[in-house]
Picture 1 (tube, helix red, strand yellow):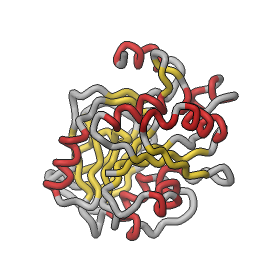
Picture 2 (cartoon, one colour; picture 1 turned 120 degrees about the vertical axis):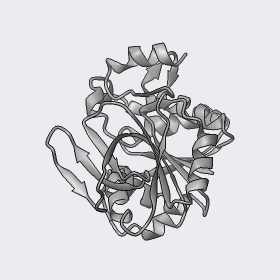
Picture 3 (cartoon, one colour; picture 1 turned 90 degrees about the vertical axis):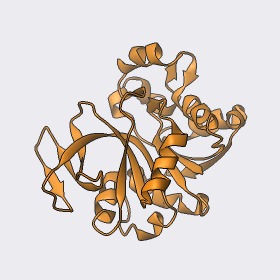
Length: 237
């Protein structure tokens, strides 16, 4: 399995740090978010990692080079010219990802999801994409039917709802920012330019199985704001 680590974002919620640095280099207990995620992947023998860059791209590249990728083979997908969001970023990096199962994750998410179990579930479900989800409060939810197949998306603040497969019973689950893709999924995405992975999921879901992997109970935190660092430091030594 190869990993795509999304590290290109502007980190607007993480100001003032991101006025002079990329969020990927924010520190939690002496280690950057980037290093922590690369070391997390290494625990599961995932040592081929593609990292996309945009905001202060040179700082991210310099840090990776100075640390020799922390022992992993790290390839850069350069979005300096145009920030493409997660979906567009994944497609731009397509030529770097081989024809292998792909794990995508966000650099500002720290977690202890068991990736061995996650992959086994993906294979058992025989799905095109499997998304990691949990039972927690958030402002936006992925929607699933009783078979844990993705059918839509909902914003709880605006009440905007997108249903792409009709279902009698609908279950809300919070997306954890990790997903496993079969390589052919990238050939089926017809969106272009700047778009999110959520947009891609909704485009693919009617004709392709996108399954849920519920990891409720396993540690996960979105280090999206400066005040979340203290909580992350309590969770991750």
